View: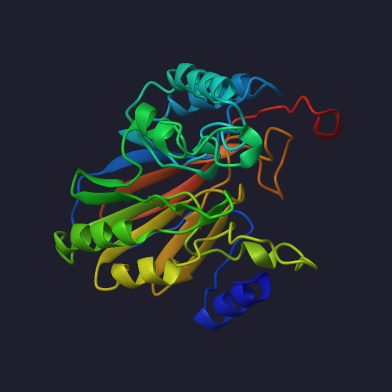
Length: 308
């Protein structure tokens, strides 16, 4: 789908209520225990640009929030797609060390930059045992799964597909769609559901940027077959879908479900503010039968001379 097609889809779908900065929002929820959790996405850990220091600063602030757990929304490191095994391993090691600053249970969502050796420039063979998502799985476990917490059913999706020419695109494959259908079938229609995904299922990001003269080779800013995923949500009490990847705050509503894209821990890839969204993370609160969200910044100062 081209950028123009995407815009048309969002316009025709009535995806209104987009805000430049994510507002507090509330949605009806059946009786449930009160709790708070964090959604931290796009840490893009690397030894350059004070990234580890910035991420540690973010996690140190976040751990002061009384949260039951956190969900990492993907792109833990920057970058595993186009580098050697030694470099990728060192990045994941750095992330693992920095993550300890958070001090709470963390659920992981796979991001495109978490996939090892996919680009030919990496020099990695697809036959390598850690190729693609295997390095991520070795560190964090399955790339899609679900869990329960205080009456809420959480689903973590894998939105990363690979193309024949060794690139990535936003896609949920057939096996995962079958799993998702079965997983939701086991959930009571009234039970609240919250979803985490890296590449957005629904976004108006294309509305922020000019239509490129040459369309991108791959569908990378949103999930190409999002309509198949969204169809499975029908008839279920999906309170919201938490998304990453674009590094901006955004809320788009479709069929009564809010698709909330969070700003990035790394901001503009550790170069400062990203299209008006500073470095930060999202706090999600379930209280008195409602769900609310707000965005927290943590005061990172970029070492990039153009962004200080």
